[in-house]
Image 1 (cartoon, rainbow, N blue to C red):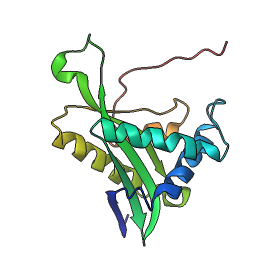
Image 2: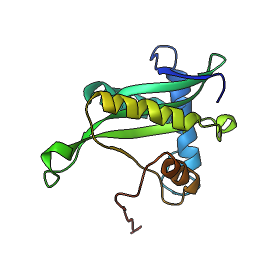
Image 3: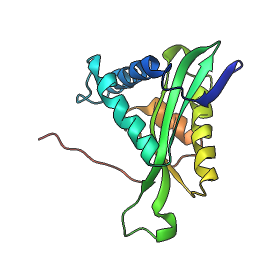
Image 4: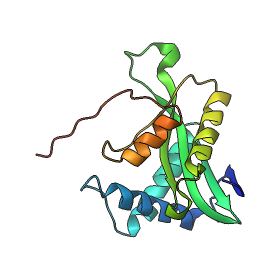
Length: 160
């Protein structure tokens, strides 16, 4: 990961990369789920929602860059569990988006982005963080497990 730095997003300059990352993430996930949009507009349409969530839910958007080129991002914010969870554990960090350009994968760029999200959550006094992955995306699942994440819940889906 030499030469890679993680910084807060610059929404003016980084926006085109973010739109590309949303489409890139969907392209990867389309290998495992048939419901992913692969049109160029998906990034343009989804990005404002992610920005709003981060802004309204004590979140941050981080980017990883190398030689001045943005090669990955993470979007994180605070979420709330349901009322059946103990009050002191309801608030938790949520890593909503994590994407690293294919050429930079396997060099712990994603782990550095995750660490930035976790550091942010710790600064807010949160006790836990959640991240999701499609069950058949074993590369992502294994990377998250290697970063210390453990199975917490399972979502099951049936196509009707």
